[in-house]
Length: 223
Image (cartoon, rainbow, N blue to C red; front, side):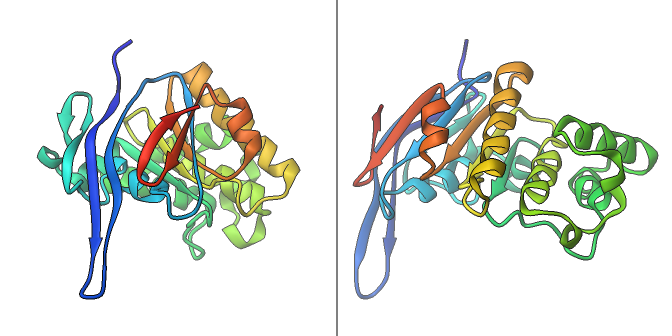
């Protein structure tokens, strides 16, 4: 199977007038659909920077990130983030004044998919992440942390692509709810063919992942 996402000799440097820090030092990796990858490592090792490059939030200083063989430097990054590379955050990042349904349909509307078809798609996605239909008209503040994270995943699934990037998705959850989220992400990879890349300190995710990648001093190691 060909890779949906490739990282080739990527470097990244943070620089200000006081110091220069080489955060990524020639990172190479390849990611396929149908698998869950755990990206682990100490704080400051470069995990979040690598995730940001893969999400199209910024471009590498050297090397390239390729989505379906095309460098992200040649893509419309706003469109790439809107349609192809969805990010799931530790803090959920739901819009508090919008209902669950409105949160899930919001990114669909940004790409012109609106009205009844979008609402029906939102209902399908809420069911897919294991939530009852009656949450659709609730606000995020009325839900538990685990439920909010599942809504965030449903929102991510509303894109056209098969790439899910998760930044500490269980970090704000207790063990039970964290386990539910891990199993959901695994199901999306194994049964629905998503490429799921998770930056995490959660050893349970690493234990269940198909591939574990370890960041150490700006370099990537397998296992």
